[in-house]
Image (cartoon, rainbow, N blue to C red; front, side, top):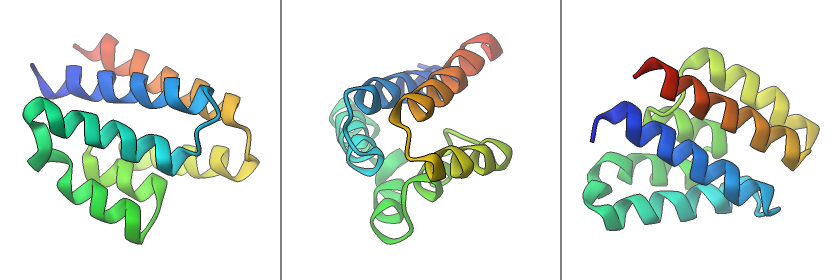
Amino acid sequence: MSPEIDKARLLRALAFEIRRKIPAGDALSTCIEREGRGGRHRLYRQASAVLESEGFVPALLAAGVVGEEAAVILDIVMATHDHRTLADAIGGLADFQDRQT
C-alpha cells in the first residue's frame, strides 16, 4: 500500500475512535497499535514516543499523517474540546488524502 492510503486509513480509524468519545490521545495510541500489528510498526514507533512526551498533534506530525498547516488547525480544534468537530476535521483530512491519490 502506498503511504497516502495508509495515512487515509489511519486518519479514518482515528476519526471513528474519536466519534466514539475516546480521548484523542488514547484513540491515536490504539490506531498506532493496530498499524503496528499490520507490519508497519517501525513507521509509527516514533509517533508513539512523541504521543507520550509531547501530545496528540505533535504525534500526528511525527507519524507524517498531517502537515504543519493541518497541525495548526488541529491544535485550534483540540482547544475547543469538542470531539465531534475534531472527528469531522480528521475525517476531512482523510478525504483530502484520498483525493490526492
